[in-house]
Structures are given as C-alpha cells and as structure tokens.
Image (cartoon, rainbow, N blue to C red; front, side, top):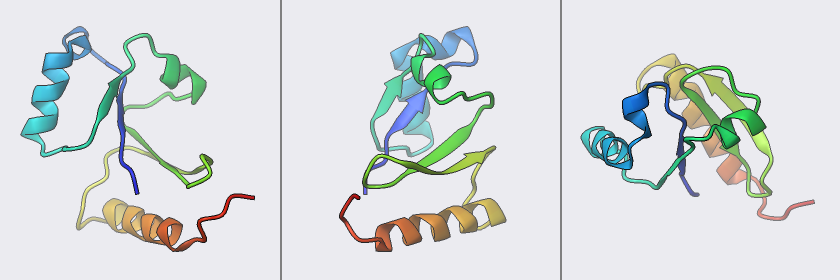
Amino acid sequence: MRVVGIHTPEFDHERRREAVEEAARKHGLDFPHLLDNDYAYWRSLDNHYWPTVYLVDRCGRIRHRQVGEVHRGQASGDEMDRRIEALLAEPASCR
C-alpha cells in the first residue's frame, strides 16, 4: 500500500513547500506530498472540495472518493478503514 498526499492550495501561504512540510510534520503525515500549485491534478480529477480523499486500486483506478475530513474513531474513518481493507484483500492482478 502507498499513501501519497496531493496538496492543492486553498490559500496563498499554502503554496510554499516549507509551509506544507511544516503542516505535514505537525499532523504526523509521514508520507510524500506533491504540491499541485497549478491545479493540474485538481482539474484532472474534476475536484471541487477541500479536502477530498481518493482511494486508488493497484491498477490505478479510482475506487472511492471521500469529500470532507476523515477521522479515525468516527464513522468517516471507520468507513475509510473498511474500504482500504477491502482493496488490500483484492487479488494483485489487473484486468
């Protein structure tokens, strides 16, 4: 399993790599983050909301989109955990 954050800034101060790195450290997000300052990923996914979480399967297909915050111990986090476990249980082959 891989986790990658794609940070599309909502505010000007969020465009600076140093600010994003500091926020990631503060919140314990120890996975790589791509800065999407030109909104290329945002537009390609036809995204409209901050935050949005996408689950992508081993074959590169978007399998789930969660709009809004996800918190462990709440319904949103429990649902995300179930979806991740289901994706991890799938066969590794892409067809």
